[in-house]
Every structure is written in C-alpha cells, then in structure tokens.
Amino acid sequence: MKFLLVTFLILGITACSYEESKTESTEEVEKVSAVQIQVVGSVIEGLTVCFDKNNSCKQTTTEGMVEFDSFGTYSFKVRDIEISTLTIDNNRTIISPYSLFDQNDTLAEQTLLLLHAFDKSETIDDEEVLLTLSSYIPEVQSFQELFDDINESRMLKYVTNDFNVSDSTEHNITINFSESNITRDNESTTIVVPTKESYESLDTIMNFVDLAVDKNVTLDNFDDNYLLTKSSLTSFNLGDKYVVTAVVKKDHVVLQFFDNTSRTTDEAILVTNSDENVLSTTLLDIRFEEPEIKLE
Image (cartoon, rainbow, N blue to C red; front, side):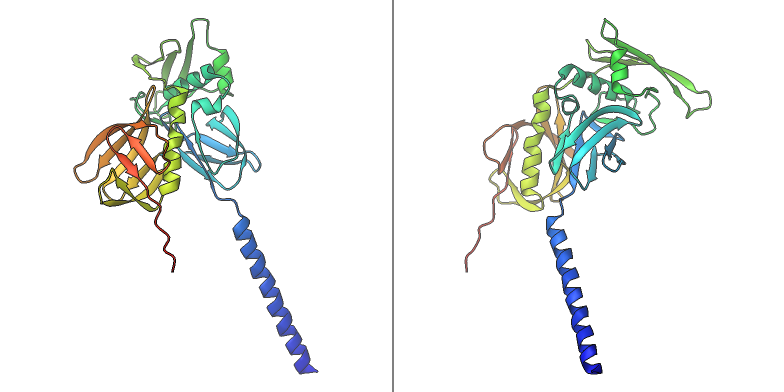
C-alpha cells in the first residue's frame, strides 16, 4: 500500500509539473512584443509618455525612444502639460507633431515650435530638443491652454522663472508662428518646420531597419557586408564602420553617414523606391538580400 501511495504521489507531481511547463510555453508564444515609440520633431528627449491603462509613465531617451509592453491608449506630456492622447496599435510607431494632431496641421506646426521654445539648449534650431531640467517651460495645464493664448497676430508670449539659479532669473519667450520664429530673452531663432510628408518618409527607414536588423547588408553592389544593428527606429549602425542617422528637413529626409574611422560625416537625401529590400539615397543604396534556403 505504501508503495502504491508513493507511486501515485510521484505521478501526480510529475503531471502537475508538466502542465505548468506547458502553460508557461503557451504564454511565451502569445505574449505581444514590446511596443517601441519614437517621438520626433527633431529628436525629443525628456518628453513624458504614459500608458493610460495602468498610468505607467516613462520619459523619452536621447534617441526620443520609449518602450512599453501593450497596445492601447497613450498620453503625451511635457512634464505635467497635456499635449495629446493617441491609440497605439503597432509594435513600432514614429510620433511626429502631425501624429499628435492628425486632423489639424496648424496645431501640429505650433506644437513643433513650442517644443523647440522649451528646449534647454541655447541652440534651439538643431536636431535635438532637451526638455529635462529646462527653464523655458511655462506652468500651464495643456498645450491647448497655450494655443488659446495665441493672439490675432499669431504671436504667443510667456514668462518663466529659472529656479536653478540663486537670483531666480526670468526668461521672456515670444513665438511668432507666422514667421516660425522664437525669441528667448534677447536671442531670436527661425525654426524650419518640416512638412507632414517629410515625417511620413521616416516610415521607409523604420521598415527597412525592421527587415534588416541584426543581418548583413551591402552598400551599392560592393562585396563587403555590414551587420546592421538598430539604435532607434530611424538610426542604425553598419558594423563598426558607420553610424547612420535620419534627419528631417523641410521637404525631405537626410541620412547622415558618420564614418567611425575618418570621423567625418557624409549626407545623402532619402530617395523613394519600390523595393523594400533597398534603402536608396542620392549617395548610395543599402541593400539587404534574403539568404538562400538550402534544401538538404
């Protein structure tokens, strides 16, 4: 009897262990891949993205990137200032100002200028916007509140205080939306506002990187292979040789090829083509070829 009881217990434990292992394996297969979101309008670092379902919030990296685990509704903010809410239902999504205000190009262009006005850097017309620790961000509830303050001349003026210095310096900011011009204190800068189509061209780069990531590619028809590794949805490395970064201009996208050996940068304009295996530019083509499947 004791022998039978022990045998029964062993069989029961074995059966339970098998079922647990089977369940874990099923969950792994069904799990949705991480949601990757890149915020651009230049590259936006320090913008807050929240998954509304559990109010989980993250700030964008130096590449403008955040990652989450689920599809759903996401809120975009600068600190606690509400910008917009979007439904994300793709594993990889590029968010431009036009994405945030899909039905209103005017609000999208105003948002781009606001983000550059908020930039912590003194050089606000470059390709990077840093929001972390900026002294140029006003105390308001939402971007809509700022839009409501734009006067008939399409001008917005506001004042901020720099509490990071002992004398709590005041900063006066004026944005001329008609001229795409920002004046901070006594320095005035004109910002180039890209078209909606320029931002949409970034999808071409994102799709090619998805296809070729962690695989070998060639440049034009040369024999040398380069392992393509992803830095963000719109930037990647070609082996140890090149760092390739997409920059959105007014009516086109430029790919910057930084050569790690010579420490120089070449630029080329992205060219549209019908072959998803080729990323074409005015300088060269980056080609990915599916490896042949050898049948035994």
